[in-house]
Length: 360
Image (cartoon, rainbow, N blue to C red):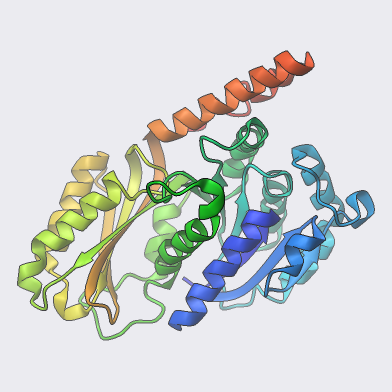
């Protein structure tokens, strides 16, 4: 799916950099344009991307200091400059726009939803959010910002693919030291999804194309992406269990939003050498997904790659039940209550029904 990537804030810019690099290194050609937008000049200077500095008059290039409302203001004030930079990148080839942001920071959480709203007003292609939720051990401010941003982003975007910062962290890996590794894992998984059908090695029996990704994300609210890979045999008949077991691991331990138990629709992409992909395995895995997710709308197909391993990518659209998301929303509420106790302000009301409750 040929996509334009726009990173908002520090985390958003770094993920877009990692995604662009992954796509270029593998020659997929799925990323047709990229841009990083931030209110902190120093964060932009380290990126090998085209960049736009916002909020110069307000914060003088020093960032918004985690202030979610200020992040919205500086994006609103300078949105015409951002849209001007995006305009030349969204060509007739683009099939989607992804606005990528860490939802815990000020610029990303405040600016990304507003930018998505403006892009929806201008372009006919789907505009998706790729939102990164703060981990459990990140500060209360990050939880509050993400809670306040999430409902708005999911309302404005055609779909919002969520990544929990804890989901793809390796055992024993601290969050701070693992940021770069987490970004690389996001890039590999999301990059493979975007590349499915764009650049193939060999001819698959049933190759996934971009329309299937778009249909899976159609009017779905929250989405999640699962991934798992394993060594495979050179004989497709011997890989039935490899396909089914990697699909199960993608759902049970490889989701970007763990503990998701139901969704409106799904897409299974099996990547590997065409001659090693078991059709029986793919059909069994699809049937298992339909039962596991309690939905009859599960698409499936191949992504031919020159790789000795088989990988299963599972995209779930319209997440209807997720213990992990419920846990995050509860953390956000508690953080607001603690803020309210400290500052004697009515901040807790900001996360009442209209902001978070009823998200799923």
